[in-house]
Image (tube, rainbow, N blue to C red; front, side, top):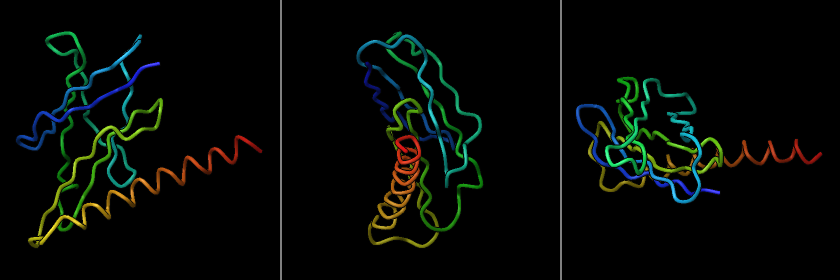
Length: 125
């Protein structure tokens, strides 16, 4: 069993960068699911980190994600379905607080839970 941790390094020139580390036994490169509104993000790259203790992740932010309102990109571990990190982009009118980002994230997580529950119901019948 292993535990994945994804740590944001920076968002620069339209590319989100992070470090994925694993605690425990990791025999292979973990597989990630990176989505925006349940659509996969293309161009995600994973490379061994320089210190050999994880993987350097780069995610290019597509221009289609940059739009008025709140946009959330989810980064999940495919094996466990766990959300490792989120990238929230707020554009357009200035927001007094980030409640819209939280609602968008809750909607995305609720959709993920609904899919998992439906899958569970199908498997147990």
